[in-house]
Amino acid sequence: MIVTTTNSIEGREISRYNDPIAANVVIDTNIFSDIGASYVDFFGGRSTSYEKKMQEMYKRVTETLKQRAQTIRADAIIGLSVDIDEISGEGSQMFMITAVGTPVNRLHKPHWQILPIDRNPSILMP
Image (cartoon, rainbow, N blue to C red; front, side):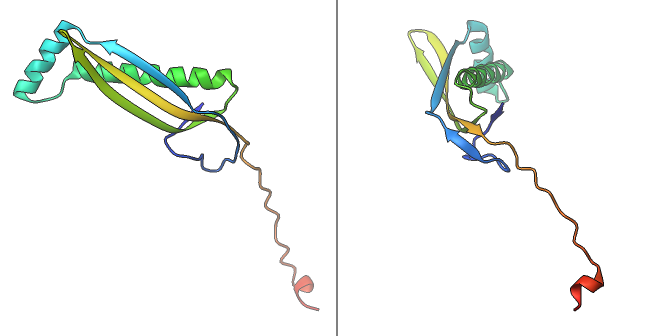
């Protein structure tokens, strides 16, 4: 299934726009990744533990959208928008990712037939 941030699919005609669908994924960070991230924040660099969590969340939320689109027999999702928020309080920290998109049905790519041009001079001249 095609999932795109654009509002169209190049070379394809959309035959039906369905109501937008949304999916949310919330994941809790654990104390070990928090400690590792605090060292990265202090010394600089990349937090691979948080990057992995974000990649996992993105994959889960897009798979959820695809499943929801498939239940209504959509062929693709256009206009994908993804938002990531941090939820923290009372000693815990979580990340929430929200994805919204429009499931569509698309017509298949048209098959164009190119006909050869007859270059016979007798046809061109009277």
